[in-house]
Image (tube, rainbow, N blue to C red; front, side, top):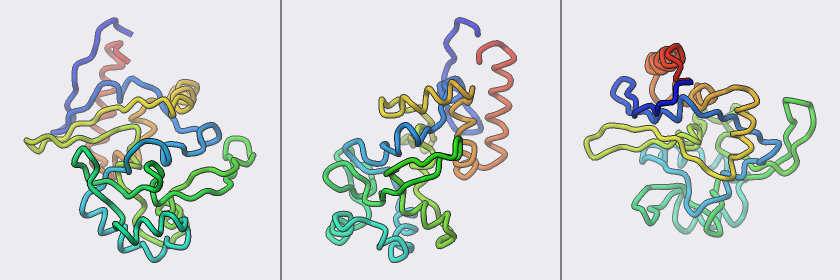
Amino acid sequence: MQDRMLPILQVGDVLVSPDILTEKFCCDLSACKGVCCVEGDAGAPVSPDEIGEIEDVLDIVWNDMSASAQAVVDKQGVAYIDPEGELVTSIVNGKDCVFTCYADLTDSSNGGVIRDCCLCVLEKAFRAGKTSWCKPISCALYPIRVKTFKSGQVGLNYNRWAVCKDAVKHGQELGLCVYQFLKEPLVRRFGQAWYNELCALADDLRGQGFL
């Protein structure tokens, strides 16, 4: 790899932090148990359209939510404005997303069981075929964060968080970069053609010795 820092990149009309192409990442639920859904001081960023999607499936996921989460939603709804002025999902006890639940999962890598893993009730319903909408795109894209500038242009940044250290380690073991791990949500958000352009840029930079 060349000993030079890459500048901010642009794919289509989207600004892309080079970290998304260079850093390794792959979630390891056996190690973290989904802690990203219950740590932090605010909920997940959501758009007004996504609030509508959540409200449409609320009756379906209601019984999977905790009593505390149900009480929060009854009081303030599925989302609120955080101190930074951003629309985010409601939370319980100042940190847990209201749409979290806990269950045992089979570890696909070794057939073992991951006890008390934190899951999203929205995604759980989607994967069970009960709904046609999965979860907020900000959740699906993590550790990528999307920022919309005043001009309307969109930028993508890689968010480093200590609770994801196992995901970084796992990604390094697999040789999987952030943009490769997040192929599905990136295609969902920006389209297949845009993702193909992103991969082509990564291949070109790799050929030049940057990656």
